[in-house]
Image (tube, helix red, strand yellow):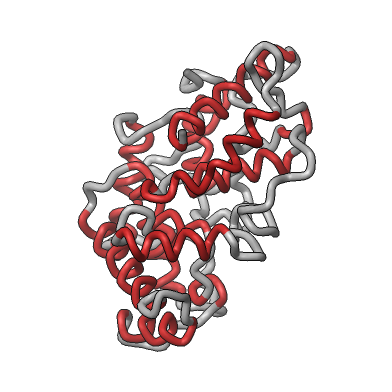
Amino acid sequence: MHKDSKWAKEIISLQNKEGAWGYFHTLSEPNKNPVTTEQALRRLEILGYTIEDDCIQKSVEYMVKCLERKIEIPDRREKTHNWDIFTDLILSTWIRRFTKDISIANKIADIWASIITSAFSNDFYSNQEYVLACNQAFSQKVWGDRLMDFVNFYHVSLIADCLDVKTEKLVFDYIINYENGIYYMSIDKAACELPEVFESKNASRFLRVTELLAEYKNNLYKLDYVVDWLNKHRNQDGKWDMGASSKDNISFPLSDSWRSKENRVNDCTYRINKLLNKIV
């Protein structure tokens, strides 16, 4: 619906011949590049692009080459955590958001699923077991906050379909109640806490968190509180308006312009209906 928007055309025009957009990681310095590969992929995914599209296929091929160590992402190697393990994590996450047919990415997902399963082996989360499993899985000491705290966008996305039913339930409950929220999702409170204001950027971020949690298919019924909240804010026409302040240039806008309220309402309604179709 939004693949022909000016937003998509602008992003695709910036893709280089390798399939990347300058630096890879969102937190990397942009330097001369107006968008990172990760930011471009996130925006294109929201606008409806899939592995069937040339720009995504090209980017996935680039990320596979990075995983295979044929080329390196151009980001500065960070010394605060295991850089290679971290980059394998983020590359595999983005590959698997578009396709589950890449064996090297699936292998990394299975490793992390095994680690997190070990961490919940006693029916509750044990950081000691998590650290032990990490160090054993990678045959080295793993360090750094971005790896040692699995409640972040990458881990949560990567393992969503890799856990057995029992472990998935334990992991989902832990994530949704984690008081600091899911890291890299721009929200600093538990996912089970509803936003105070519906017409806000925070509400849009809350929807992004819910969209991520909706990948845990065996626990969708636990998102009924989100369904109730959304239905409460539906207008008399059966649509939603999250207000002009919800524009974050990530999830919104979808249309070329929000100068028209109708476009904004249509964008909000499209996104919310898409989410409801997943969780109801």
